[in-house]
Structure formats: structure tokens, C-alpha cells
Length: 139
Image 1 (cartoon, helix red, strand yellow):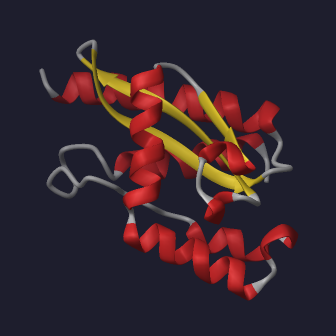
Image 2: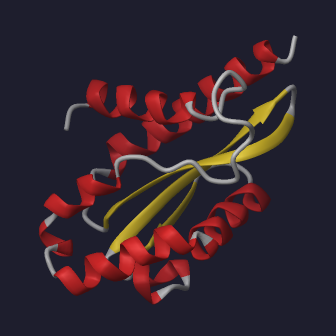
């Protein structure tokens, strides 16, 4: 996937948290089916567990919460997340701010072999753009 496509996908996802959309959801997820095409996650049992974790939300919300407390980009590779279900995945997160206050976290889940040099700047820039958009919405 090219850098532009990743940015477009990330901005589309981020747009779901803007006030004009749903009323303040705790967690907005999109693109989970993209994980189905990854070699590392070809095992149906692994995919089932991962999708179950997404639907239960607790584990992913806990990871996103850790990112808010850490400030800045946070990367969890495989077992570093503390959750077996993410053993074959990496999660790259960045908090976003509205009017200088952290209001949420943007994250990307992908394979441990993902192109970090592309994903990290996309997550970082999208979180910043989302913060700018939310700050403007509040005015």
C-alpha cells in the first residue's frame, strides 16, 4: 500500500470521530478486514481470536489508553502489548489533542513486519491533523 493510500485510509478513519459524525464513540474501528490478506494472520483461529478481541474492545482500549498516558508515538510489537492475541501483530498509536488537551488516540494494527518507516509518520501526521480539525470544530 502506498503512503498516499495509507494517509487517505487514516484520514477517513479519523473523520469518524469528528463531531459531525457519530456522537462521541469510545472506539471507532475500520479496515479490520485488511488483516485477512496478511500471510502472518492466515491461520483462521488467529484471525478469529483477533476479531473477537476487536469486538470485545477491552484489550484494544487498554492499549490505546496506555498511549494517552505515554504521550507521543507508542509502538507495541508482538508480545510487548501484553496480550497474546496481538502476538503476531504490531500496534502503532499516537494521541491527538483538541485545544491542547489530549482527547483520544489513533492507532494502526498490522503485522509485526509492517513498514514502520511508513506507518509511524502516517499515524503521527493523522493524529496531528485530527487534533487541528477538532480544535477548529470547537471554535
